[in-house]
Length: 257
Image 1 (spheres, helix red, strand yellow):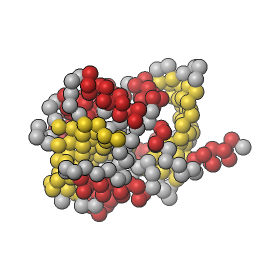
Image 2: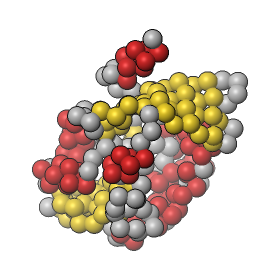
Image 3: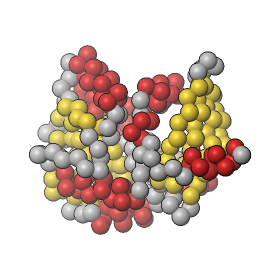
Image 4: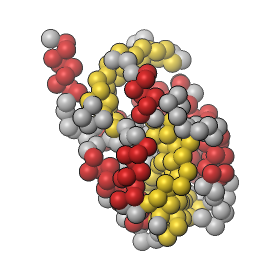
């Protein structure tokens, strides 16, 4: 019975991400300590793109603005776009608190439009692959249309080879005060991990559903090329490790051609 219920939930097509990235999500990652790496990640961006002070930068799916705000703190012109009103509220308050100028805009990565074009667009922390393959193509198409010629696109995804080597149908972990259980399936035809996540702090329980598509480097390159972008660099970590079977991330720099 439980297995049937799990299958039914995992095959739903609702746009889960529209409700997922709220207060609970941000608190979970804060507990995990992942946000402490923001400066290291921006250091990497400055080096590998490389960034110039005159660059207009779009942080696509910026969340609560940690990369956009750090870039603004370093003197770059930054726009952040996200769908979550809750996350954007945090981002705007934090930018104001630090007396930084960042334009935070609510929008959908599949159909955003700006009057200006950007020198650099970044998409970080696996903020891609949440819908259909056509959704992913629309995002990449919009990225290409929104870049100036020779502009750079940086995308940070989980490595699919690493995922295959380390996949577990049930994953349990303790993060600070939180107990987290992920019940997962992998759809080999779609290249999608579907998951039910149960997070408990001892008194309250949060249940959420996620769906994320991962790509091989070759698949991602084909998608980028078809939309007018060319891969120029790729790495396996923010320490600059070469991409390989044992690296958890796939960090790609592409150029508008």
